[in-house]
Length: 65
Image (cartoon, rainbow, N blue to C red; front, side):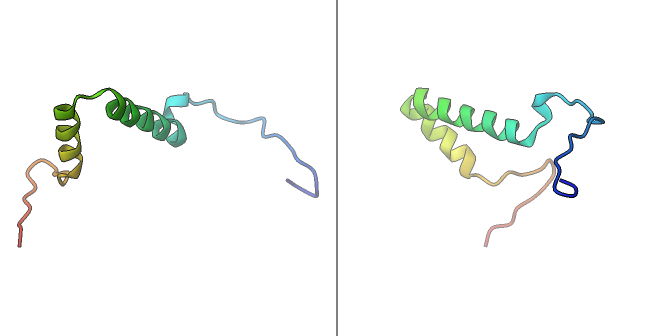
């Protein structure tokens, strides 16, 4: 908006929808919903446990107290 007028940016670089953070978040939410709806008890339990585990990078060591 400039001087009370809205102007469109005509020099916009087109990018694939899949590069959008909002799109990626929505797709991740859909995958979570599918997992919650369609998993068996054991699959759901294992999935939840895997999400609760710390995500370690290769070679990283975690020392418990």
